[in-house]
Length: 306
Image (cartoon, rainbow, N blue to C red; front, top):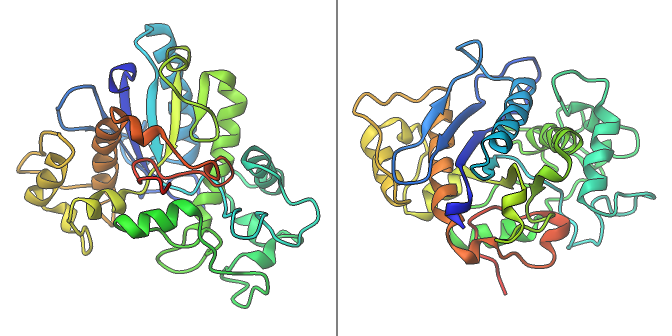
């Protein structure tokens, strides 16, 4: 399906408070083998979640006008919470959202007064705050280290992210995911049927031409570890390391002067993700996910267990 996409955008995400986040980085790979290029923020310094939202809508609009095919966009946050293990996103909660679209709306409703798509209000929400391990709720009574099926599969093949209800520590996943679910909700409202969010929406060869954008979940660390490379301690800031990782995904390397932006080489995460998206998109098996993924989502490129 690679030929159906006009571009492959990797986004390293952040759930931090505020209008701009240095950790947000964007890179785009075009069809072929050239190395992905970094997309700079409109102010030349830092992206924010609002500006990412606006850029994605503009990019989708441009794809529709050009008629060159949709853009495949991968963003680094969990698109949903675990569901399969307990039969609910919030076990024991009356009115727990029944599916991912309802979950995105559920999050938006509780966070809508916070600007810049910030999602921290979820951790203080009266009915669900006790499900999240957060700075003000270290003893959250309903918190469990639950895992989605895609995380179990990712761990078996390379590396998995932390639990989606964990909102503390360096491996905090929840803060970015709550902000991300707000982003999906907003993009769905703005783009309607021109946007497919995989695997919740069906994506196949026949339907792709009618789309402006396909959104998938990514995990940059997985793409490094999958090819036997550990990006810890800013290893991805080394041009040789980065070029070797890109080569594993059929891409040309970076220049000798490569110096990734972001305190944790975040730009490198966006670049490897863009290259991995381009590489995986042409493999039919990567568009197959277990039925349970319709509730929980699936990290693009992680092999499905059958």
